[in-house]
Length: 222
Image (cartoon, rainbow, N blue to C red; front, side, top):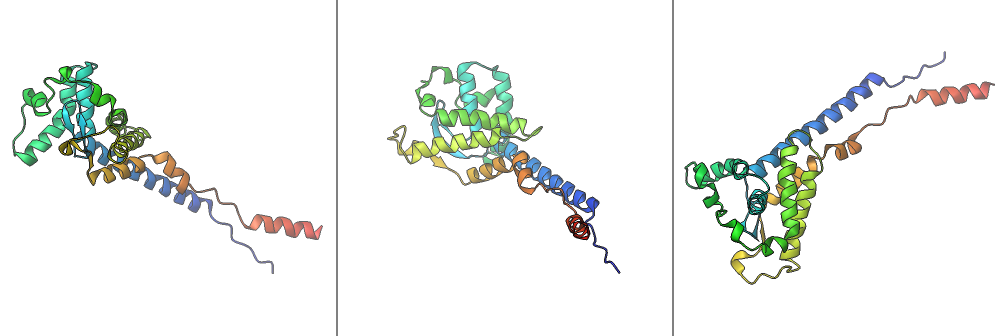
């Protein structure tokens, strides 16, 4: 009797492919949300000299530049700062900061009079902070490369100043410093790029292994 070879079920492979894509989508969405919380709740990621003094978050760097350049209205910038200010106020002083005191809290009242040389010397950190804030906001709707690109720019700016010494800093209290939370932000930024991960776990359509054997056997009989 001729033995019949079993052909892999297409429904099984399709189900496995769907499960893989769903798992990747969940991972990228979770990573994008964690990254959003890190940025908008202003968890300290680094310490670097900025236009308003010393900045520890991309949101602080971005807000100081936006107010100085008058690109966006002040109430909109306050709305970006307020969630993080509330979290930091509850943790440090167990009080909710006033809306009117936000600019004083972040030392942004006289930001327009400050010299722009500090920001120009750290263009990578400034540009990376812009991309990080925008990527965190856009990533809630559609995770993409913006968060990853911004985080890498910030890290390169910090490495250039901390290791290469550019620009030169003579004040130890204002020396660049990277918090361990930066590693979490970097992992979340890379994990939120879902289309790159799909290429790794995307399954190739399974081909029936019995067909080539059948074709070869028929050719021999002929």
